[in-house]
Image 1 (cartoon, rainbow, N blue to C red):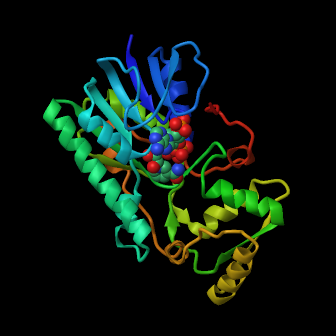
Image 2 (image 1 turned 90 degrees about the vertical axis):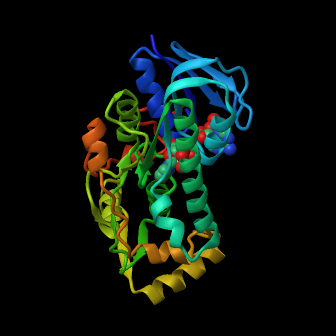
Length: 293
Ligand SMILES: NC(=O)c1ccc[n+]([C@@H]2O[C@H](COP(=O)([O-])OP(=O)(O)OC[C@H]3O[C@@H](n4cnc5c(N)ncnc54)[C@H](OP(=O)(O)O)[C@@H]3O)[C@@H](O)[C@H]2O)c1
């Protein structure tokens, strides 16, 4: 029987991964800062970084579905042995390093340094660390982009975007990411490197939002506005406490293609993500297939 240690198992990707590990008969030890109920094949430890409590000396695999920088720091000084370490990072490492926003540049720097530290630690120990970098995540109504747009659109019966929101996106479902984590863990061909994990379809930002809105009932209308009008509306929205964290860089990025190559992941562990075929349940408060914790 295989044993796994999972960080971030209460998150949207982590919950989908826990379900798969348990279904396949793994014994799972999962960390959470919140008290959670154990179940068959699953034991929760309450705690977090930098010093998770009560860990065994060895497991078959460690999965990180929480903050990569805190995980990499912990792993560098942890005594626990594990032949495989699979950790989620983000394609933000590619996207945000040149942002005009200092906070976004810092995110990219921390991700880059965490990846490098993780690979260095694993190599020194003779273990294999694999970093999986999702693009824009959706699927169980817990993401901060599409689900948030769906909530706003439901509230107002409509949604607005700048007409220039034509940059291409590759939304990726949490279940495909959980499958990828298990496949990467098992595959002998998966190397100590980072793998970008885009979704299975590339579409323009506005088309992605339009398709998502179309699956809601009633279906909110999408209005594409000239940029100056969009900005004016945004100022008014912010005054009302809406979209306060939508930065100028985030708006500018709606024009940019954020497109990544799934080829290495497909080649090394058979990554084959689904196309973007949204349903209302993926953006609601209802629980979806993976099950919330
Ligand atoms: N969401 C996206 O669009 C997206 C895109 C690209 C990459 N990613 C990456 O994919 C991974 C998983 O993302 P997710 O969206 O599934 O995450 P999530 O839903 O936000 O959950 C992450 C989990 O990590 C744990 N966690 C958070 N901060 C922590 C801390 N300071 N110390 C210890 N544990 C902490 C939390 O568990 P407890 O509260 O139970 O302790 C939380 O449930 C992350 O590395 C994220 O950066 C996400």
